[in-house]
Image (cartoon, rainbow, N blue to C red; front, side, top):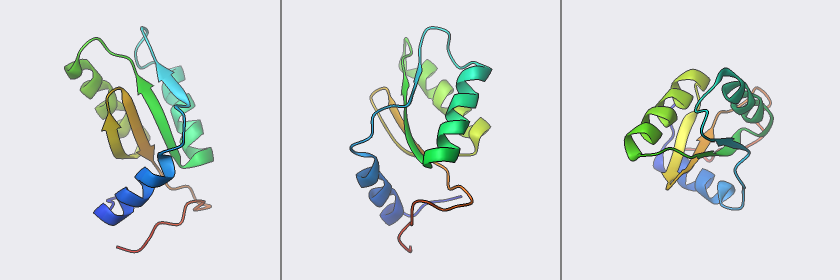
Length: 98
């Protein structure tokens, strides 16, 4: 799923007040953490994940792995906070047209 700039801007606004629902710490990206992210995406559609990594490259690899494994779209990455969107079958968040 590709998002237009207008849709990304809309989702950034919607995500502004959200707190991270999943935090990735010293243990890195485990199957349990991935399952939590998928559950949160299925329920909320738009979530924030806090990625605490030693360096920028490690953080980038973790973020890429999350996106690849969950099939979610990266809305934005600011510092250690990754904002993800994955539309569920209920389509709880109505995206603006392109």
